[in-house]
Amino acid sequence: MTAVLPREAPPTELEAEQEEEVHAPRRRPPWLLLLPGLLWLALFFLVPMITLASMSLQTGSLQTGYALTWTWSTYTDAWATYGDQLVRSFLYAGSATVLALIIGYPLAYAIAFKAGRWRNLMLVLVIAPFFTSFLIRTLAWKIVLADQGWVVSALQWIGLLGENGRLLATPAAVVLGLTYNFLPFMVLPLYASLEKIDPRLLEAATDLYATPARAFWAVTWPLSIPGVVAGTLLTFIPAAGDYVNVQFLGNPGSQMIGNVIQSRFLTVLDYPVAAALSITVMVTVLVLVLSYVRRVGAKELL
Amino acid sequence: MIARAVRAARKHLVLAFGVLVLLYLFLPVFVVVAFSFNDPAGRFNFSWSGFTLDSWRDPCSVPGMCDSVLLSLQIGVIATLIATLLGTLLAFGLVRHSFRGRAGTSLLVFLPMATPEVVMGASLLTLFINAGVATGFWTIVIAHILFTVSFVVVTVKARLAGFDSRLEEAAMDLYADEWQTFRRITLPLAAPGIFAGALLAFALSFDDFIITNFNSGNTITFPMYVWGAAQRGVPPEVNVIGTAMFLLALLLVGGAEVVRKARAGATTG
Image 1 (cartoon, rainbow over the protein chains, first blue to last red):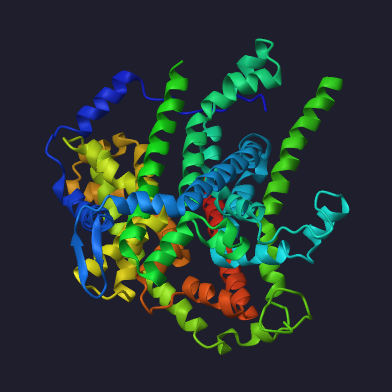
Image 2: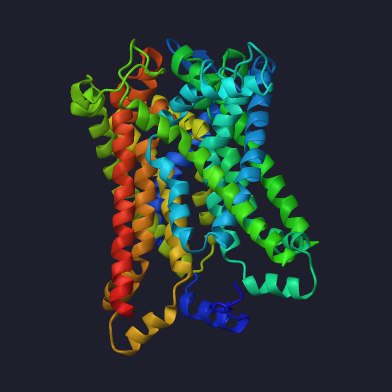
């Protein structure tokens, strides 16, 4: 692969400026284009978020109705009761994200650099499992990880699991399920940023006597950081709020915050606590995401 | 010589690892397909007890399942049409215009993607409860449009960003008016992005469980059906639907690839 592929040169600053002028003479927002979508997002995203926040500070019941009483103790009570589930959610989601990065990066790398003419096929294969429903695939893991299944038997045989060791209904199964379900969200952005890397940069590194490992850490990895950030976010965020994997693969002791929110909302009908927990998850995710993006961004600058 | 061997091993090592990861991705799919031919002994289709084609002969014999598939298709189509329209307009507005408040608009588009589904589902349910709206078909449609719109915007934006604006200028230079330019140049060039966005929206909508679970009331979409069935025992017919969806999608992708190759061959040959 020494042939230098013709690539479109990135626009120079001058060109970019000219383009700005061509396309952006107007300062007035293009209301006709924006308004329908913005109204939808405002009405069904912003307003519900505010309603949710307000609900978390209300007291009352379904029969008597709810009134805004600014009861902040709902939050502290909810944290005290469901602290374990909160911590567990972020722990499981974090583990699944790291695992997905570890196994997803080589896959994305293989597709981008090693697959040759099989590249498109491998990309389709990454997405293809998605075509069977998420719930059905998670249920299938239940069969794979079952106590009498071949995975458990094999692990017992090589001694990684004890005689009565099991996988189903353990935290390990939940993390495995989360990793599995969100892996394509990790691989695709990783691939997108790896694929953009100019192979000439790697050739240059080799010409300058860099070992493959050094070329990887000095060239490939830093250039793939945008994909790493996008992939980890796309994996972590849905994993943190998931409750399907716990329901199918976990046990009551491995419940995540999503399980609590859904049962408080849909079965117990305890809206204020459910709302307080939802807001807690939302704020925590936003804070984690922002500080993570900022940190990685700062690293890039160094 | 040795260096070459090492390089070859390295090349195949990464590739081999990648293939292993793909196998991991496919393992549950194989199970789903295999168990669609199972003849389960009890209510639960969790252990292999014999080969049969019964479930394939008449998958709709299971009460309620095919209705739920139809319902999911309906919801998916309506939500996709509206989300694609809203999202494409937003993407054009964001890419083609610079205006005060563009950063805020982008943030508002980005936020739903950064929101865990359980929070989005809960917030919509709270809104519907407060507004006294009974949850059902249309609340699901509203929710699906909401969470798919951002994905359409991102997909279409990506396509528009790599757009050679000189083509439009050339059309205008050749006395095409704005509408003609849009219709003959802009739209055909943006179409793959719009199409990809629509496909993504449909796939997300059809498969969504978490947000739907909050806003469905008594309406049972296919994922809701599977969730319910998981508690009482999933019939192998569910695996038939899962397998059929998988094959159908693969056929579509394969067909699109064949068409693309044929076209590429026609233009170069």
